[in-house]
Amino acid sequence: MAAPEIDHESPTPVYRQIAAVIIGDIENGTLPVNRRIPSEATLVQRFGVARETVRNAVRFLREEGYVFTVPQRGTYVRDRIAGGSPQDGK
Image (tube, rainbow, N blue to C red; front, side, top):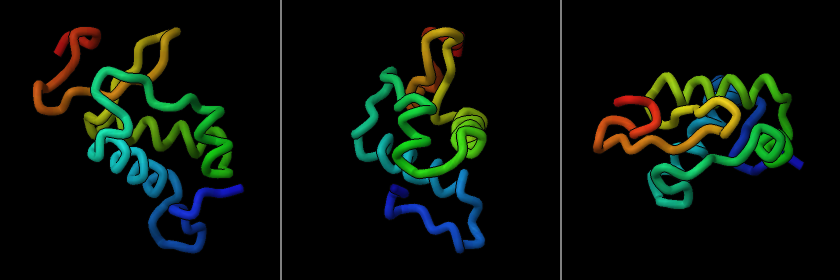
């Protein structure tokens, strides 16, 4: 079952729509700083999309500075006000 926030007919790519939902969760505090975002598998199930689409969304979030990834641990919400996290050296 796809999440209602995603419009597969929109001109906005699905991965960007997913990223926007996650950004909303970060900004409203549902996903707090230095806490893991849901796993790829969870996001695939939540949004009803392919794993590659979720990976593109997470890559976009990382490039935009919303999250950072710790190998073998997961992807975490970055403290954008402080400009980084202790784990990623910023």
